[in-house]
Length: 232
Image (cartoon, rainbow, N blue to C red; front, side):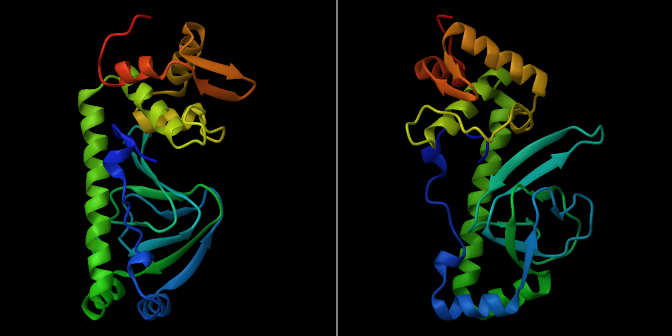
């Protein structure tokens, strides 16, 4: 999950292991180290020396940037199949953001030199990394464009639509996404997100039944998300 304009923009996500045949997968698994993390554990920390990349085998990992004042913005939440720990995939330098496990996570850790050797030994792995980096570049470009050109209310409207579009009915918001998470995703505060969602509910744009929030008027959020005027 990331902040972007439309789901189709980021379809065709490149899962690294899916690009390898069984023999190539075995080479990769033998070269790396399997590590498990508990929810809330840090995989890598902003400012620490770069120690390689982590291919997510199960679970979700949040990558985020922390400003000097302590305020955080979520860059993305990556599912199994993606890697985190870039952009210096071959090692060197420092991590420019952090990664944390959102649930029990299993990863395959590849130190920089190991990743470098594998790109020379296995062309399919090298190509998979290129595709993965291109996908990440599109994700972060979309995030930058949204933050630079859309207001907070426009970003909130867009991310609500993105979240609902992934649900079974295309209208329900996931229960596990908190107001604090939404705030970190759009670069705002939890209090502002809570007030804005309450206002959407009063206006009839959103419906709330217990903890479940549903989009009732998606057309209003779509107009708002694209910077248009609404009748509310």
